Image (cartoon, rainbow over all chains, first blue to last red):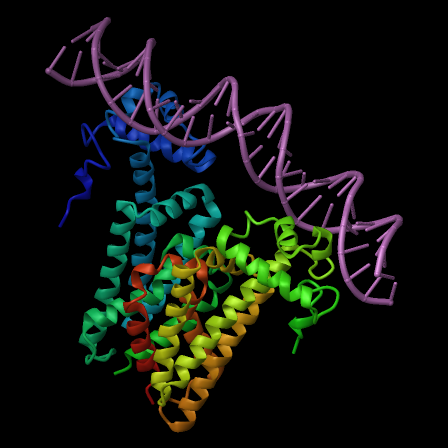
Length: 205
Length: 205
DNA sequence: CGAGTGACCAATGTGTAATATAGTCACAAA
DNA sequence: TTTGTGACTATATTACACATTGGTCACTCG
């Protein structure tokens, strides 16, 4: 597996360093208050008391800083989803919870940190690394649930797991992709319910 | 049912009139060549040999002209889908064909008339009348197929028809909405197949 | 050597004055 | 009445000079 923690398009210079953390902290603050575009690299530098050039000892580009902040948001979403899934027992319920919580966690980010959500939109639209990792994590979680459901006999076993998993991911994708989710806000209440029902009917043994 | 053919937000003055047709023809030509934004109402007027003011005897706004042209595109898509559906016998095959052809017809518009596709995006994003009509038509077609499948015993009958229909529409929606479809181009080959499979598994009696 | 920076450049963004456009209306000709 | 228009306004768009910004590099200081 690829180690995205030492990826040269995302990081540069010392991986563990106090200043790196300061940059991330300052960026989180500034990006969420003023937005990615209206925050300059100089702003970040000033707020931690260094020169702009020093930022570039730790990050190869402004976008790389953005990706770090975005990665934190997406990781938070994955954590919330995993937590919600862990709260119930049956695989079918896990699936419902997963779908519902992905939407709710994303929507929370949208409501409470609009500016960071906008970064997530750029990330998904321009296919930043961090988005690919996020998608993989969601897909893994989905596959785990499916595997468990197959083991317990709650889900059918004829259809190949990959096919099952892929199709269900495709159903969920419009609600995972931040840009698409925006165009589905009218459905965030009913969609996870109706679509979970449909998915579960298709998974009946 | 509401008569959108005499809707004051879309039309004005004589409904059946040669000049109206000329305007629509000129607009189709200009919009598809130069795009909606870069075509001025004066351009349309000039190309049919009248003054700009005369256009407004037939349409209440430039957008209304755009909606007319867009309505033609969407009607074409619905026709293509209905034709494709009529070509097969079994309800299950009709569903597959429907899903596949919606995507292909939209993609054809995207490939061959990019500028008109862009109008369709505006229409869907800003919820123009014409888009609502289009969605209704697709939903009706879907419901017809489901009803037939229930009658023939090909589809299960426990789940309420409305629920079934709604859920399947939600699965298809990302591929019907032109703006969302753009972000799913990577999946236009596999999605209709995988998702039709999933839907049909959920419809098994 | 490692931490840190000012000066610099190409590219991108911004403010603004000038232009173009959507839409209306009173009115004319047929 | 029906067909058709030029002149007008308020809003949107362009164009262009100017300022900012992302990013680099040679350099200093300890």
